[in-house]
Amino acid sequence: MTERQRTLLHLLVESYIQGQAPVPSGILAERLGLSPAMVRYELIELEEAGYIAKPHASAGRVPTRQGFRHYALSKLPPELLPQATLERLALIMSGAGERRELLLVQVASRLSGYPALLRLRLQRPSRIRQVHLSSLGGGKVLAVAVLEGGRVREARLDLSFAPSEAQLAEAEGRLRGQVVLEPRSGDTPAMRELFEALKRAFTQDELTEYREGMGLLLGEPEAMDPVFLRHALELFEAPGNEPLTPPGGLNVRVGEIEGVSLVQAGVALGEAVGELSLLGPLRMRYPQALSVAFGLSQVYMGKDRYAS
Image (tube, rainbow, N blue to C red; front, side):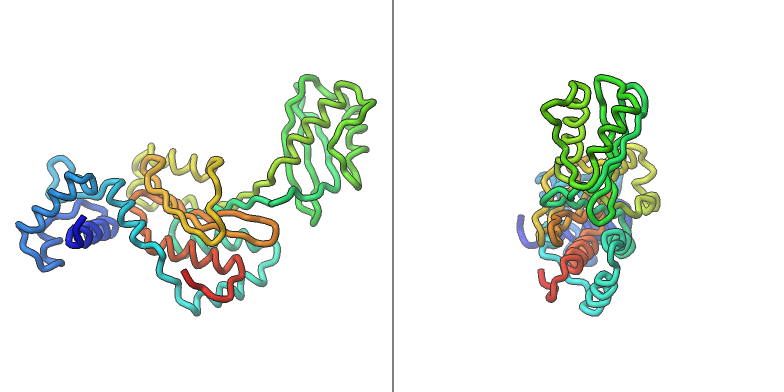
């Protein structure tokens, strides 16, 4: 791709993001000070390379997924948010206490205009202080673990038998103080199965998620497409098991799920590592989203200097 084609592509992407409609070659020629014939020639080259497309019967062109991705990656490293804004956010975040993560996604969503999702994984499982067990019928049991610091974690167990109230009470008695999620040598098969299920549920990596702002997508033109909304909602509610972006790093996923883009920033704090994600359509405001995700990730990690 030549420098002129790159400039033309980026202007077309930005015009499409702002105008939400195919971009005529005449507008591009006027803004770049080029002849209409030259612009049409370069657009044909970009179209043949797969960066743009011409909708049927349209007077203009639109970016393809490949074109959006080229544009988004060109914005790395992102521009920083104003220093005064970052310092003010750092002051607010430092006083948020246990609301720190919830505040992070709320601010990220408000500043970017997109839904925000934070996934945090503890490097070691939290110590369990107590477990409460309740029968849900049919061999299903609700286990509520009280963790160090007073946090609560739930798990639903599927057993091959329906435990009695006496069995649940016996298990709860063993799940206080120094909790050990291991069956004992003299346990009955039923009690052994129960403790093995508890061990599987509570000794895996602890993943905590915070979400904010899904309703913001309803203001995007793409919300008229039910397929887009379904994909976006699925990704927002169940982001999958992909590896987290490394702390301090940035990741741009353009259209890996049809019609949806993600801007992601890796974070780390104490014993937790995680990822802040902003979710939008292909026609996402990538420069703004990247600046917000990166800036807030730095603030969250308590960086003294904000540099990309």
